[in-house]
Length: 110
Image (cartoon, rainbow, N blue to C red):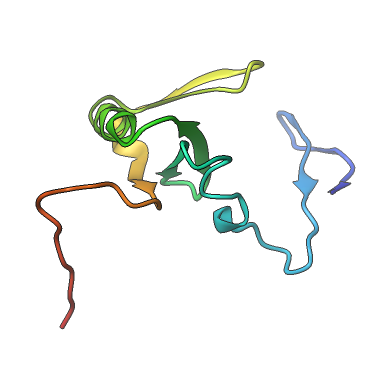
């Protein structure tokens, strides 16, 4: 990670951080699906391109959390900053591990 120098706008001071990696992009798939066999990773995709994620301990928790996020929005709290993103900012909520269901669906295109 390389930090750029701060630059001044006419009204405010901004600082930007440039992230350097082998391919210069971030891919949330680089973070493991789960840290153990009993954990599930929930990913929240925002309209500005950011992806937040956290882990829960059961497929029932995945269902509960994703339903609440879609209905009420997402509250981000990293221990330093607390932010609430309203539901209209959420593009999708995803869990990549298999979640048992009696009604699996299919998708297709034309």
